[in-house]
Image 1 (cartoon, rainbow, N blue to C red):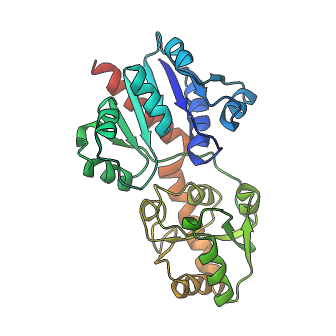
Image 2 (cartoon, rainbow, N blue to C red; image 1 turned 90 degrees about the vertical axis):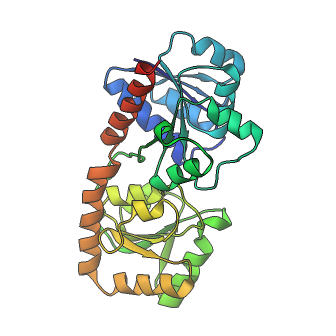
Amino acid sequence: MRVLHVDAGRQMRGGQWQVIHLMEALVARGLQAALLARAGGPLLREAQRRGLQAWELSLAALRRAAVGVDVVHAHDARGHTLAALMGVRPLVVSRRVAFPVGRGPLSRWKYGRADRLIAISAHVAARLREAGIAEERISVVYDGVPALEASKGGVAVAPASDDPAKGEALARAAARLAGVELTVSRNLHEDLARASYLVYLSDAEGLGSAVVWAASAGVPAIASRVGGLVEAVEDGRTGILCENRVEEVADAMRRLEGSPELVAALGAGARQRFERLFAVDRMADETIEVYRRVTTAR
């Protein structure tokens, strides 16, 4: 099977890393995978650095590269738009964000061009259904990430973010109230190696890739009870879900700070759930099944 991936993202965020993980897993399974990505962007550089087949994205490049492929898989909104404009089929589109799908004529046309929508959580799938997209056109495939080495523990970690909706200020305020020294990380993979627990707060979330990465290292999470985070964290078994109120987040921090046994138990549960739901192999196998459905339906 030959699959062409399209992603026009400007930054290297969770969605772009999913493209890399998926392509590598497809190649390992003997599929042919190629990528069109933004010229000069970090995704194109990373894909080429890893030896993946990748070229600069343009309408002309998309027209050429789509010839003879079995599936085109768009991973972001602009990539979806370009693939729809070019009329490439069959078209699979990943939807990663938690906010509602637009209901205007352009959005309805664009989503109507997709043969299958992959939602990264049941929450995202619900947003698609609310927009009038038929259930039979939607598949839920959780993100998958490579496992990190088990954390040695020691510090509370929260990801740094310039986005006010991501809750860094709330995490800092809760840590001060709880009397906890919080490591605000700009290199999450490195800092998870010494994390006792992750604090991941957000106003809205499709799934929460940082929580998935933490689980892969056996690190439990304190997370907002919003969107797909309620699927990424099983409250009381792999972490603690809470409302976005400083007192409630602080209480969750105090619970974990005061009980190494609870941290260990939640961390073990997080790692087990990661292996069952969020491993790269599972994500790749379920995505390939989506490809098979759209190719056999034509």
